[in-house]
Image 1 (cartoon, rainbow, N blue to C red):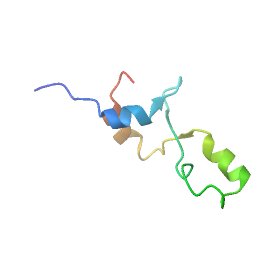
Image 2 (tube, rainbow, N blue to C red):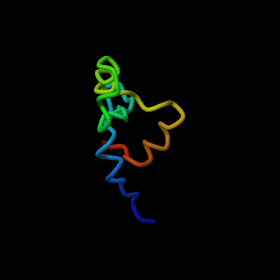
Image 3 (cartoon, helix red, strand yellow):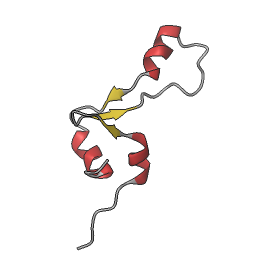
Length: 66
């Protein structure tokens, strides 16, 4: 059986932290920014973590090396 291939789209969107958690970017920061409050936009700029229920799925997509 061949090796599993890394999902390249997922590999560009997710990064692993030093402790092994998976970091992600938050959505809703690309357009229609005038109606969003300044503090809301600032919070969206920071990275978030992948939810515990989704970790297994994302790990399978990005592979062990990323």
